[in-house]
Length: 244
Image (cartoon, rainbow, N blue to C red; front, side, top):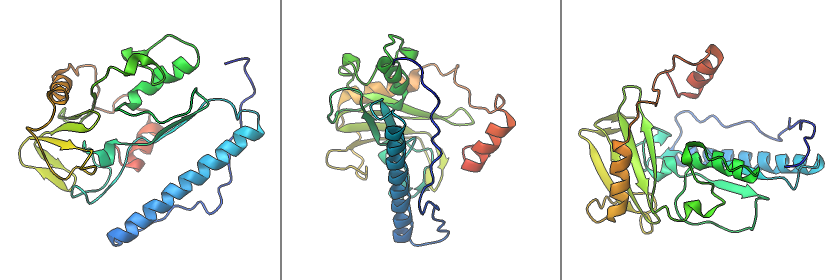
């Protein structure tokens, strides 16, 4: 990446940057408030890019992504409950100055970002054997998987193909949506992008195989507790609603 350069001060003064607080508003008003937060994020990214240009970093790689989506009643929930639907798990991922411009199709995972950043830096390291998003390593992936491990060790998971998606939710109350028994679902997202029509039994076998493989994987190395968090990190996670 070249010689080290001085640290970049990216303290930005955002114009009209106060985030909306909506309380018990109607769904339409909540969605409108959420749209305003998207405009807020757009304004931040634009100011960040301007600052990078001013400081001589404009030609360097820039990656912008989200950590999760949010629901607005599509599956009985508002916000980002630990569910496997696209409304929560499908997020934007934009990379700039990393090669030929274009839109990349097919499923991928944010778990591949570490390998991608190392690839951009010229390293052959691939943490967790994850592929770089810029290489041919990802082309042969028929499905990618995602999972949540709950505090009590319960797991929910999904396998995502080009069009089809298979997902599993264990029995339990996960937000406003209750699962009186374990749930196996499948959706053809090419015609049902918000996953309303369950078509389990019609899905391609490879997405079900990927889902079963994910659920069968050893998770002994996954920590579901917060004993290793320092007080400041724990308090921040509590403020954000990730732990109680």
